[in-house]
Length: 274
Image 1: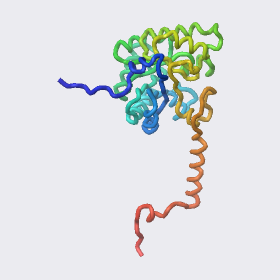
Image 2: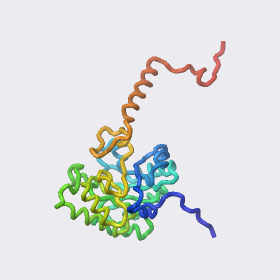
Image 3: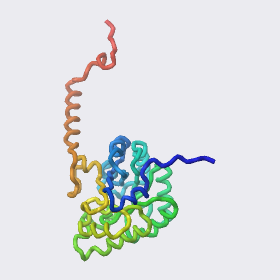
Image 4: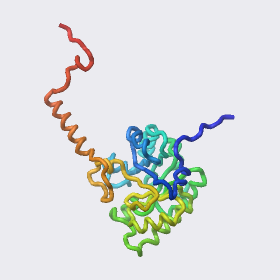
């Protein structure tokens, strides 16, 4: 009888147990090398479908495919060691039926070996979340502003700014929590609503543009590093790498054009014949 090695990474239940405790640190990553750096400080790493925007130049996340998510999810798993890796389920891979969602999620988990998936939607996705959870797939929810629905929303505007608009978002939060999510991302909602939801549901809330009232926070790595040209208004930049990278590229181009590289014999120790 074989004995399986214990899981060393954080798991969905580990994150769920942080409700009301030390804030949960989460960032996106799409590469092995950035995952290695984020892994040292993050409880969870999200392989977000925002890779469509920051890696491929799409205006929305809608064109992102399952194959894209699996490719980058696998890279992040190779680069990380201790953080829970959560992979987004892209648009069109889970909405048709709970069976479609299971096949997509199972493929993500088998091919990347990640610890959980994330999907967007509240009440309308509760049955699917329950179906996945009952079949061994940890699910992180996502309510409030749901970017995959941009063609219905019309713009990336904040949700729940008026108290009269709170009820549907509150219902979404309760529905996904009751369906079995281990945590819920709340995107772009007003602080009073985020605070109310965080107090009302038994699983952690992870905010993105939803104030410090949540149990944790997530940001797109490129946004917080200053690599995105137009980050959301709520993003605090912790670096300004864009200009630094451009400056380095410009310096390299100048060296190439002026032939200012070391001679090959100095680099590789080669000797030319007399």
